[in-house]
Amino acid sequence: MAVVIDGRDHILGRLSSVVATKIMAGEDVVVLNARDVLVTGDKYRTFADYKQIDDLGKTRKGPYTPRRADLLMKRTVRGMIPFKKPKGREAYRRLKVYVGVPKEMEGVKPERIEDAMTLNTSRYTTLGEVAKFLGSNVR
Image 1 (cartoon, rainbow, N blue to C red):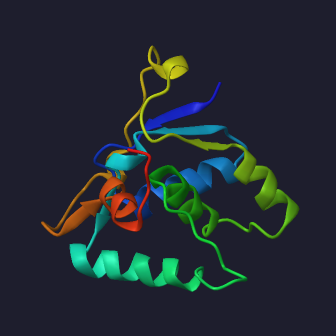
Image 2: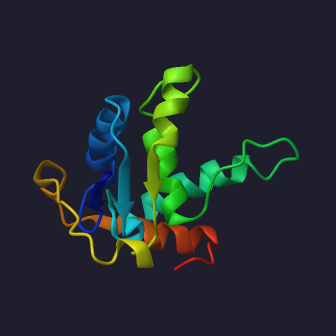
């Protein structure tokens, strides 16, 4: 059985590090509500940072970066595992991230990670807002 985590009100970096640890340990992890995951820092600075990364991919050869909230979350976790090694690729396949709650997960009670929820600032934005700024059509 997979570990189901509700991403609402979790901080992106802290949640991603917990998820990376779990998938590297061999567990299957499902993250729900990726659009409600918080990115701390000044909103416009966060937008500028993600826009700079997105503009790098405008050239003919990339690198191509995701714009959807679920894929931004997956990319953050990918940066925390040894993705270029076979064990990292196997671990990455054990991760599923959804923007909302899919129908097959409606009856499941997701867990909350308290260590990833302590917000010490009033400056934050959500991954959904970042995705909308980058031009994602998935809400």
